[in-house]
Amino acid sequence: MNKLISIITISGLLAVTACQAQTKQNEGPWNNHKAAVVLSYDDALNVHLDNVVPALDAAGMRGTFYVPGNALALAERMDDWRQIAKNGHELGNHTLFHPCDGSLPGRDWILPDQDLSTYSFSRLTEEIRVANAFLKAIDGKEQRTFAYTCGDKVAEDSSFVEAISGWFTAARDVVYRIEKQGEINRMEVGSFVAMNHTGEELIAQVEKAREEGGLLVFLFHGVGGEHNMNVSLEAHNQLVEYLQAHEDEIWVAPLVEVAEYF
Image (cartoon, rainbow, N blue to C red; front, top):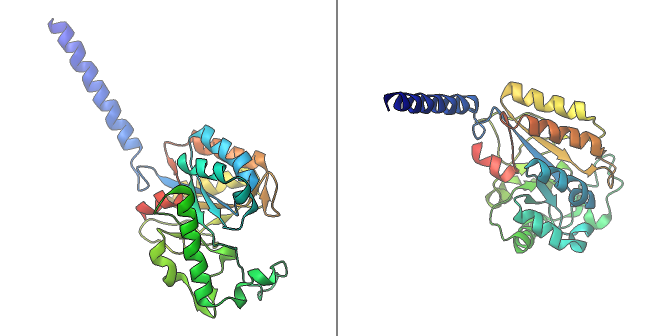
């Protein structure tokens, strides 16, 4: 009996030690991880539903999808977007009509009706507010994040950042930086714009974030096509596989969840 008790005691101590070692291994500022990664995808494309979501779901990861209200794939596949929201992916606000400042160089592609330089301040903020109501009708959620269209933050010569700050948990910018906890402007969260990058190049960015103990937000458009700002499906899947293999150190979650750790 004494021998049995000793065995049970030793087994218990080993279990406690293992648990403590695991806890110590997972210590970190980002939900007990060394670094955090947000995978964000702009413009509600079919490839997001067909290529991205299956890869993320298979890896047990959730992303943030910035959805313009006028996106064709949203109107045609509303049930699919509603389902991915139920499964834990975030539907982020990307305005109603995706306006961008057409007065800037290289913006010849912007249609007159979507030219932010001709918007009034109230029109822009009202469209963002209505887009929030529209998304809530799809997913039923109160909290979400915002992404500046083309990175633009001015309407009628005034920044609208402060005007919308009370409506969102955070907002994603297009300026590259690895964010450090305690130093983040929640309405201007930096991001890495992925375009024609290889899997190795995407992974290198994650490794840098892990070394610095920071937050890295990826900004994807096309994944395997459908947009001129594109990465190959192979490169994207390499990144997902890497993140899955390092899930003990790198936390992958939607921006609305990661923002709780700013």
